Image 1 (tube, rainbow, N blue to C red):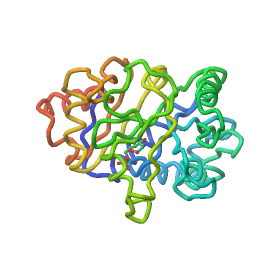
Image 2 (cartoon, protein in one colour; image 1 turned 90 degrees about the vertical axis):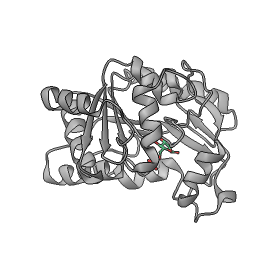
Image 3 (tube, protein in one colour; image 1 turned 135 degrees about the vertical axis):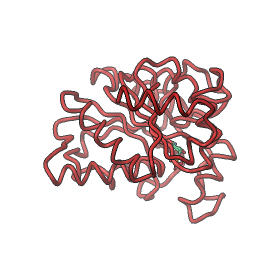
Image 4 (cartoon, protein in one colour; image 1 turned 135 degrees about the horizontal axis):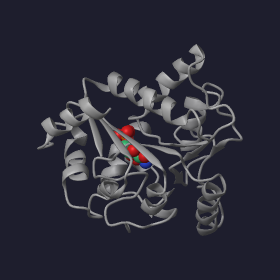
Amino acid sequence: MLVGILKDEAEVGKVAAEHVAKLMENADTLGVATGSSPLPLYEELRRMYEAGTFTLEGKKAFALDEYIGIAPDHPERYRNVLRTELVDRTGLTEENLNTPDGGAEDLTEAAAAYDASIKEAGGVHLQILGIGADGHIGFNEPGISLVSRTHVDALTSQTRKDNARFFEGDLDKVPTKCITQGLGTIMEARNIVLLATGANKADAVAAMIEGGISSLCPASILQMHPNVVVLLDEAAAAKLTQAEMYRTRWEVLR
Ligand code: GLP
């Protein structure tokens, strides 16, 4: 893992956008995440699109996950979030935005179809990730199989509490289930960039980078991936014991 410890959230967004633009120049498929962590990155990509230095024109995007049991027009439905953030504002078209179908009658079939659609598109070239306070990526919560494929999962109470801010602070309005790419699916992306900011991510970030590989921290599986860049602000990096090593490696290798 190449770990960049940066000044603040804005810097994380800027460096992430440069990285995305570079890796997507000659690639066709971008894996996109939701949550608040990638928002500064998406803002920067929109700015670069307007300036003519970045485009997703002709490229496909694949979302990580989707809520189950959310109204199709709900602004927090992940397809709607990604539509608002990226479609027509970065060169991405509605047809090229792929999201798991959380409204499908047969969710098992929808999960398998989603994996197949990623494969058919040639796999994800670069996957953008955030991380949950409990170490989840996508919606792969602690205890999930490290080789899981796209599947239906339950949200932990921690994640539902964390996400209540997107649902008027009302826990009862937060869906209880989701459909998410599995850890095995995510690990097939050729490159991964993970963004984490804020003190509430510091424990999960330390477990991901320096803990043992365990489904207790699903993101720790990324230690087994050869091309991961982790971009942190100082607060999210605060519990790393080898920060000086990471800073040196970042300066030399980035
Ligand atoms: C959400 C999403 C994840 C996201 C994570 C962190 O529930 N399913 O893809 O990375 O939780 O969210 P945030 O960036 O808002 O802290």
